[in-house]
Length: 212
Image (cartoon, rainbow, N blue to C red; front, side, top):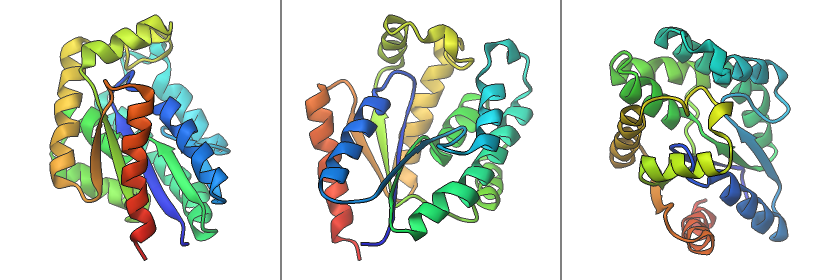
């Protein structure tokens, strides 16, 4: 089976990390090669990871939105060319925590940066036109997601967590808008139990096995 590129998207505290590990386990049990990675940064991607540190650092709260956007795209360009594409060519299932959808949701809808077509154009340049085979959007009320992050003691670790609730609501609205227009997007209700979300995800993954 040719490699498949699967992306998990969503706001803060949606439970993506838990479900990524569960999906990895299931795919490996079925005999597939699996490469887990994330954005910004990337698994085994030192250059992209250094950019991630800058983007996530709470001390960089005065970062200009334009700087933020281009740092994300610089990280992604390195990640895609040196890590994602090579694994796809080796027939891996590449599962990525965040990708282009987050750029649109956070930098366009959240920050109000540029118009949508401009952001899409420069992202396409950064990725060489790579589009996920499946993007799964974890949808949850932003207040609930941030509450989960707080209970996990992670709010102080990420510059984006400290943004006002209104910012996170814009992000959710952006993700939902994207799910209606972008190719190969599916939504799961992240309020459900871990087991129910896992089952919903697998139902969508199974469709990839039918794609030649």
